[in-house]
Length: 131
Image (cartoon, rainbow, N blue to C red; front, side, top):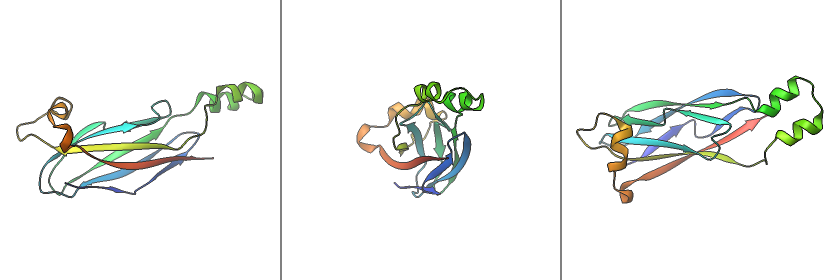
């Protein structure tokens, strides 16, 4: 099994924005994906669970939300108040876990737990926000 991500990294404006990425199944078997993120406060992933047909692809949409501190900054509040709202800088990432789909599966959310842990693989999508 293999999963390719195109483009292989995500860059979005820190003030909020979206980025689309193709997830391509490089195998001859249907797979299930589950997307996890290291920062669920500022990022949303869609879909979180999905099937990808053999040699097929789906789009993953990454959305960076407007931070409360960015919103406060637009109101021209003091810099000290804005600084209180900001979290520590860190590298974020989305981890796309994937594994073989049961043949009779119709709902990826229900089918995901049936994949044996030793059959689950992962691919990483680095996330970065620009000023």
